[in-house]
Image (tube, rainbow, N blue to C red; front, side, top):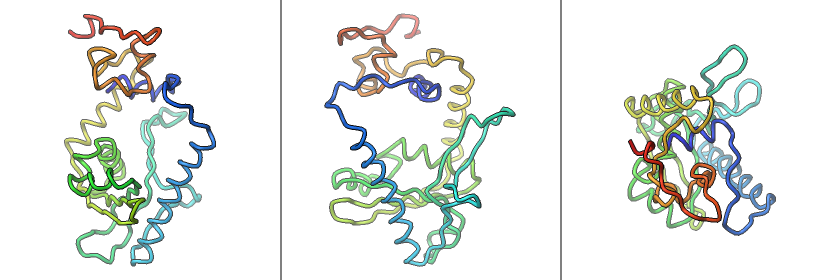
Length: 219
């Protein structure tokens, strides 16, 4: 949804969640556990013989920047690492690395269907990373938290998909306000909008009453 991307780009505050309150300390533990998972996966790969670059010359996480206006970059992303050398013939050198964790149910979906069909978000993240670092592949590695099994998939660069994603980014960055971008749904009760963190802001809901999309938004 371009409207959701625009809200994120303009750093719009997310709606107050209706779910049970989650303490900040708990959120931090969850984030830290994700970082720990990345570090462990990189460590395991290095033990297996992979040469991986995960920090730049300044000790910062490797990544990419674009859309510099003379003062700042308006588009940037981070990589979990870059595989400089691989001991496995099927995995080429100089490919991006993406590390993830998942519980059993989610993990099995990736094993059965692959990254592209299971998570458009992860797939888009890797395609943009490859596009802006001029690399042809990304190694996706996921660890199952229930069994510690590892799933890996070598994801190839898709020029058409990367161009489509890049065009969306350009459109969003050209806006002065999120509302300039169209919504993906036709109403707040559209299933594509139900779990959006900006649903209330976007549809201007009051007292949890669902509003209908304006006609001009449907044309």
